[in-house]
Amino acid sequence: MRFCLHDLALDAHNFTALESFSAHVAVSQQARFDNDTAQEKVICLLSQCEVDFYPIYFDELFKSFNNTNLVVAYSDFEYKSDYELADSHIRPPHWSPERFLSNDYLGPIVAIDLAKFDSNLLSNNFSRTKLILECITQNLEVQLIEFVGYQVEASNLDLKVESRQIEIQDYLKEKRPGSEVLSAATPWLDISNKKLAPDLISVVIPTRGAKKSRRSNELIIDCIESLTQQNLGASKVEVVVVYDTDCSSDYLAKVSQFETESFSIKLVPYDPPFNFSAKCNLGARNSSGEVVLFLNDDTIWRTSESLLELAGSAMIKDVGAVGAKLFFENGRLQHGGYFLTHGFVGHAYFRDVDGFGPFGDLAITHEVIGVTGACLAQRKKVWESLGGWDVSFPGAYNDIDYCFRIREQGLSILQVNSACLYHFESITRNPTVRLEETKMIHAKWGQAFGSEPYFRQAVTHPEVKYLRGEVIQVYTRYIQTTYRHHGFKGVVKIFVNGIKKVLKKIF
Figure (cartoon, rainbow, N blue to C red):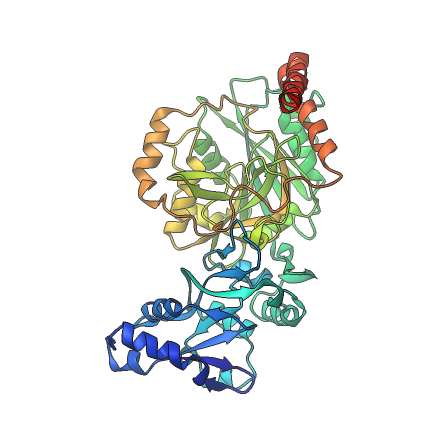
């Protein structure tokens, strides 16, 4: 196996620059190749800037490319600095086609087996972006090597997106008509999928209809009223309200008042006891839309294009489910996708201030291991193929189980960060998790609770902890929320704790 620095514009191999590394690999691997083809294989390195390679990087490339179907490999890397950085190790996420469309996060070096591509393609002045887009088109294997391969000066990185904006737009126009680049902002592109939304979107809302909201309405009323303010474009919405038969039904008449020609209401009775999974299944069975959005009744939409972005993203081929970015009432993040942590699953960026996140974690659409059932959209055919939600998880972990079953079918799950909602979590029910459910989820999926693939750089702390101009607003909302749930005593406790912290620092 030989390595070259490749010039795509000239389609020219430069073996001289990496000759010593090729020799190192031959010695370290003792020329043990699985077959003659592997021995003759040439791996081309496409470089965006000058880097300092580590010899062991080529050993890792050898292991990855030797006798496999791998086409593209990228790796972790380090920043060079005259200062002692707390962490100069850059950890890109695992391969995510959707993330790549918005952001070329693969680092300044990618290793490619050009022999896997048709020679006619390579003769058309192919760029790095076009080659990787071809991998998406042909479903060719792209892999992260979780190993630091080289050092780079941070100032040498080219984060501008103008050169790839046209290429991405052309790709979407040809391969996914309806998706489009709305804007470009270094280092990513803002891609919209709302034009992919189907003619009819079903929104399934399980509810008890009993609790009051900030405006003394039932939560379901505020939820649906907020839904009516969404931009529907050419789509129509069918709201399927799955309501408990043992609670006051006065709110049902209020719900029906929202019905219009493009916004229909269907009321479906449910006999308790509570089972979220059973409610979702009942609602889906009574739905008619091509896309079904499972939505908690304690949610309020923050942005007017959110519903269409979710429904459109759910229509993408091989996507099994999509979710939104959710916020607590005080403006802090509640959910940015699920991630694997400490042998279990948690909410990414839980209770943090909103920001961009490494590699656009909180700004762009990208793969995740799961999304919360509080707002989960998918094609109805996917729900049917899975046989619905598992009713043996009535209260907790049903969405985790559901998402892992989706991924088990080879479908991806997307976090759509352009869709934003408030989520007043667990207001309508007792949030206590039964021990039996915890044991069940670990018994069923414990072997899958390994290392996190899509939030490798940071999973709880965005790059901006406090956004200037929003601190007062955040804490004002926090006080308002505390007053709603704990009354005046709760607010007093906040100020007492604050004074104690100040006095502790002084003395």
